[in-house]
Image (cartoon, rainbow, N blue to C red; front, side, top):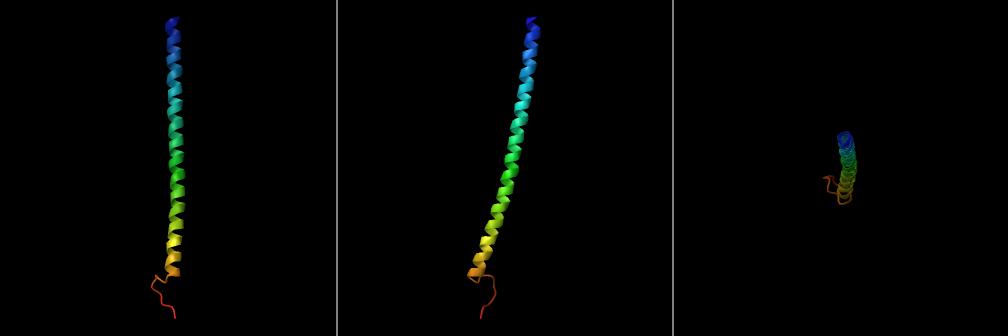
Length: 65
């Protein structure tokens, strides 16, 4: 009887470990995807700021009268 109980506990521990690994992978992937989206947004903001500076200081090559 003791061997059956040990087998059941080992089985439950394996299932628990598998669920934990899946949860960690999901959290890691969602963090990576969110980080990429935020990074793209930051890059868009940076490019807009660069364009504004070029326009403000007339660095875009155009001539003003």
